Length: 190
Image 1 (cartoon, rainbow, N blue to C red):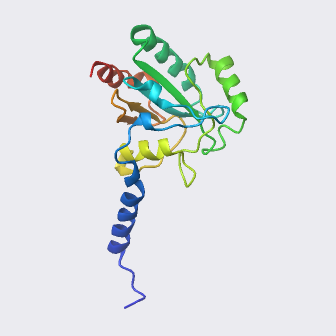
Image 2: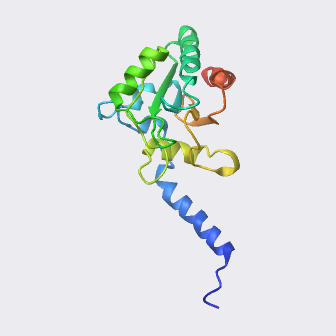
């Protein structure tokens, strides 16, 4: 009857929509995106071609904010040994508990003064929802989280991008930056 809804058809249809909406990213690589910097200008990721890149959504007022110091330590350690082959990029995000309500300039100052952050911190970025940055839409599609969940769950989720511009690993917020090192080193060797 018309009032009976078949849950199998709904899930199939949802799956179909998911595939259809993300298919325009199929042939893209990390380097094809141009997110916005702190001044709202395009930040051309193609300058990181042939580098391993760590992408992190960050927040300056979050239980994981102390990871800035750990990220900076890992970044400096890797830059000392692989200076031309590695880069980290932070994307401030205010979607989780309003963890980054400040203006872009204030976020930059906070990161530099409190944690000595020397890697690029771009403009505030939505990582989920209708206004999610295309880069984040692509990364989530390339490397879903646990149980196939695509959405970013919280601040300080980390994506490792290899030299070919493909996502090779995704880490939860609870993963300490140092835990990324084996995957980063392997990507640097490939």
